[in-house]
Length: 252
Image 1 (cartoon, helix red, strand yellow):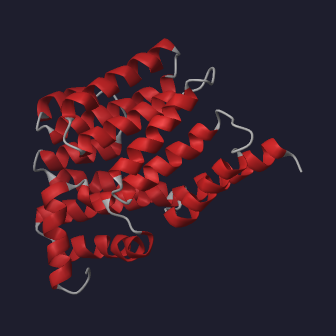
Image 2 (cartoon, one colour; image 1 turned 180 degrees about the horizontal axis):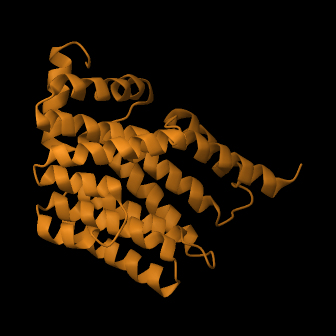
């Protein structure tokens, strides 16, 4: 019967479901939390809005993602000593990059970095660097990306850089070590990200059968949860691999 505990428990379940990539269930929990808060508005609703923004983005509902992200940032600004506004800015930067607005994405990342330094949210700095590196890679600026990423322990970003440098042979052992780590920790969402990059690395190396083997589980699970951006954000190499999977009857 404790209202705040009910709200936070509902949020916690949603976060766990989202981490397991059970997006439909997570979206339902986040909406349930917002319904609970209709008569008692609390700034903590920023968490539910940001969760819904991430899910809308994955479903390629970019308009809905932007709307929820803006609401999240507005409400997060009412909270003291929280990094939620930084999380919202990071998400908006990813969204703007996906929409092709790299200059706005860069400005949002600069703002996220400024806020993180101002409030000493040091745990957010590597995440900001990862997004900055991803944006630089999308722009084809490999030199700047390499300079940025060398100061951080970001194996997924490092693997992306190696793939952009046409060095899948070096990326594969890095990705395999990372896969074993996230599997041991039972991080479902991170494991799927690794599998996607492993698939691209094997494809770049010319080992198509192994690439499709890595991709098959992601495709099977994604079909039920409606994942889109997990694939789309990887660009032309993923489109080519999906076409091969479709030709072999693995994807439709």
